[in-house]
Length: 350
Ligand SMILES: [Fe+2]
Image (cartoon, rainbow, N blue to C red; front, side):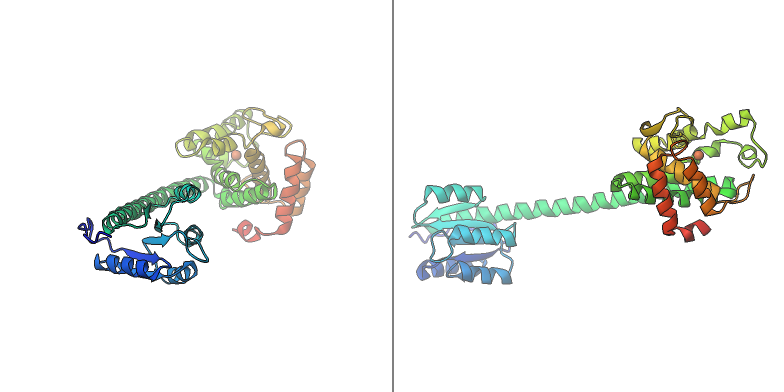
């Protein structure tokens, strides 16, 4: 055995190493040698003892004999991997069986050393393992910093986005005092109906967003027309009918395609007699059908410039009569459940 020691290339790697070896002489020699190189070394005489030691501390590197009584080195590595993915391994063995060799490679063992080994080989192998360990840790650290930065940036954009949405909602409601609280109620009804219809979380969120701003295009329509107590002329109604497209123009820079489509078609009717494109049935995006229903119900039960609020049961009767004509019949059933469930009474009062 050659006891000449090559200078350790990275003294300050702060390595914690565990030596697992059933032969006392080899175990003690390895422990003393690695300790003399400045590492903190623990040792175990077998797999079971190694697991007990491992549970108490975090190790950069485990150097283990392959063939030991009881638990083999491969079995030990498999168990340690379930406890800590990052630990590196060096195998020491008297003879390298081809099956073990392939399995060891598959398991990503850093290196193996054949007995009888010399300390120079061992020193090089340990140094290379610890440099690899350092690289892994640096990469993890870098990824964590990057993830945190992206999360912070994403959070800032998200907050900025929702602030912009809220400003637009405030702008709509400031223009038409009768619509105070309308956006939030339509949003809550829409999301509840969407949830009852079994839609995905992402779709429900997009419907909620579209519901909040579906009428933002009314900012481009005269208040005299919006708040007119008398019946609208055909020309005035023509102007009102432009608001879904105006909403889309306003929202295009901040909305994705699907919520934009929900806004665009929120005045289509199930029977094809709505606007702007006279779509019918399932051709109308699901989000638009839901918003249309929630919007109509909330408008009926709220005071408007041209009429007083209707009672909820009467509004539901009227909507029920319109199922299959103005509204998607399946969704009408969900709206009835939403209202009868009563979870939005507080919001409706707002
Ligand atoms: Fe509308």
